Length: 360
Image 1: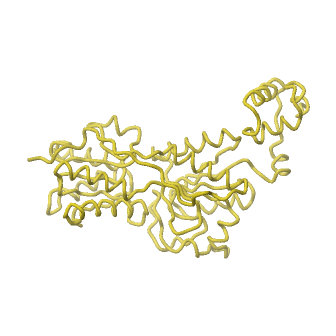
Image 2 (image 1 turned 180 degrees about the vertical axis):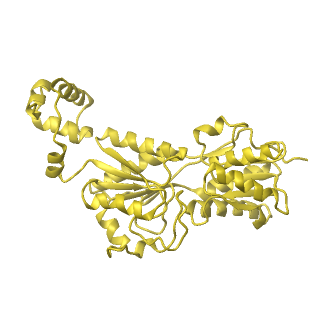
Image 3 (image 1 turned 60 degrees about the horizontal axis):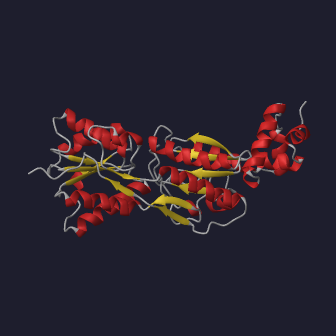
């Protein structure tokens, strides 16, 4: 049976260097790592991962809690996490939680059992926190409640869990906790998009928001409202329809909005999937986009530029969220405190053909 000593002889390096190249590849040069990998392949060496984990007390695996793995936005975030993890020899275990607190807690328990080293949570809820205060939507909603001071059925408080479980929260984030967050300034981004529509002459701007409990929904609605107020307008509650970040909910929302007392001239959807569903519904109802009604979204997923018409939207650095979250988590696993607890990545307004001047 091939041993690590056989690999070291073929590679021409010490056993310690071979071990380091496998467990901490960032600690060796690219040239040395390549030699070790070639030697492993040549000798058909298979490391005893369980033995290594027992010795180091590390699994070299992290858990990513994803509220909706079918959402194209999250696929880009995961790509950023994967690339950052692979560079340092970590594996990524994806948990498609569907926003279910019980599923999230099950995956989080893997860290306490030392089957994984840390967690990246892409949902606005801390594992083992109180989830009784909000609606569970399965699409990244913030379930409310005092997550920092709550406890689970085993008597563990979220605060004590944060101390024992390395955790980073990205995208849809819990505010007011001591958990590091990587997110967008959603209020500023939504405000900028509403200002774009206002500059085109739109005053009757409808909103298709996300789940009412979501921190993303709250912040984006706040930014939209601020833009209206600064323009001397008030938020018309009849022009707000609830969605769940799915295309189907965007399609359904349009039916509600077209029946509103004040006909909208533009629709701001709080993600791109809902915007695409909205455009589909408008076309079925005989409305031209943007000739009759402009439609804008949020995220800039890959399909946004290819839909008809191409979608005006807010570009989020999705891969950047994943990369930065992984970098912060790796630092925590090495005992380092994050330099900044709450990090905000930049957004960009992408203007395409789905938005235009208000119809005269």
